[in-house]
Amino acid sequence: MPATQKIDHRKEYLQKVSALLKEGALNEVRLYFHSLHPAEIATVLESLPVEDRKKVWSLIPPSIMGNILVGLHEEVAQGLIEMTSNADLIKAASSLDSDDLVDLLQVMPESLVAKILKKLGKEQGARLESALSYEESTAGGLMQLEVLTTRKDVTLDTVLRYLRRRGEIPKATESLIVTDRDNIVLGVLPITVLLTKPPESLVSDWMDKSVVLIPYNMPAVDVAMLFEQRDLISAPVVAENNRLLGIITIDDVVDVIRDQADHSFMSMAGLDEEHDMFAPVIDSAKRRAVWLGVNLLTAFFASWVIDIYEDTIDQIVALAVLMPIVASMGGIAGSQTLTLVVRGLALRQIGASNALNLIVKELSIGAINGVAWAVIVAIIAGVWFGPSIGFLLGAALVINLICAALAGAGIPLVLQKLGVDPALAGGVLLTTVTDVVGFMAFLGLATVMLL
Image 1 (tube, rainbow, N blue to C red):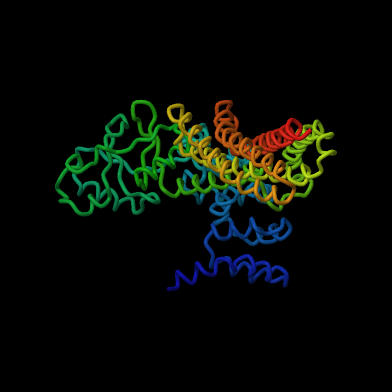
Image 2 (image 1 turned 90 degrees about the horizontal axis):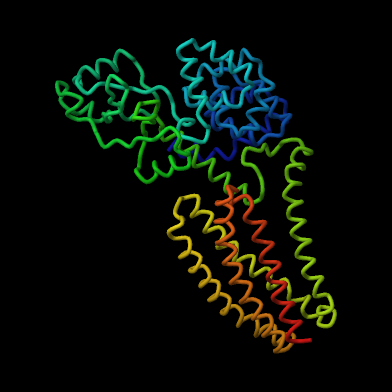
């Protein structure tokens, strides 16, 4: 019951902290933070305006700064790092596991990274420096270096005594990695086996040889999909010849899934998921201006198409009234297809072998919906402005919905082929296509049929 109450109260954290800040009760804020998890404090910090964020950050002890910083979006974390002393940052870094520490070092100034690596000692510093060489969005960038290993020719009792001498094990450890003398992965020994099987038996008797090995250069998104498909909690990361480098645990994969969801959602609006929502107004305006400019260019293009048929619109005013219907219906239909295809590409469900089948299917859906809705809008427009206008609107709607389906399926496939993020640019291009095709179909047919 207490756990449920805790979850229910999370939505009140921001209101509570904001109220205390308004009263100037900084000591109460400090005491309140003692009851919160670092991830919850990170959420509060991201939700506060910059000036309030500075006040709150000054109350955070260095011992938990590191765990808070790794839970923040990159831009927010960098802003807080800039206002923190090097001594406090070094203390914060020393409290982190290797995977979280690598994430934090990647957003720190290089001069400070060198000091932290030196502080950690030659051996650990060298290991972390090696981990920093991997791309952040790959398995190598996700893995933690602390790994429990064992040999296959020792008894379970020997392994248990070794663990007792250690006194602690790395977070989210569910298995020990079984390696040979050259650090080549041979299998895994689940902790449950270690605790339940005869202690005099050998590791080789119980180890799981069907372990899933993750190449260090596998994209993080693919790692997340592999964890989901295989129901993994952890998996070893290997270099060439299956040489053990580290291990990825489920908590790191959850971060990848969250980041991917944020990226997909924000990219549809041309925004960056790492952007601080309380960043300076000028900085935010500049970032958004780029996509507003792109959209303006496409809007002028659509307006130019309308201008071509100016004489037709002047003679038949009803066309101006009904034009938005064609463009709007095409935009919605295209967005449905675009969303489906972008998701399919992200999940690796669409490739060269099935892309054509998907396009044909979406064209069929566009044709069916086009005809069905064309009948409805034709009847309404016919009653409103006459049968000829109704027929014209229905015909244009069929054309635009079919073209919208083709664009919605084709644009993300082409963008991915060109190395452009379909989620980022697809929406703008689709809007242009559906607007231009809709206007050209409706006004072009009107020019041919009614004048």
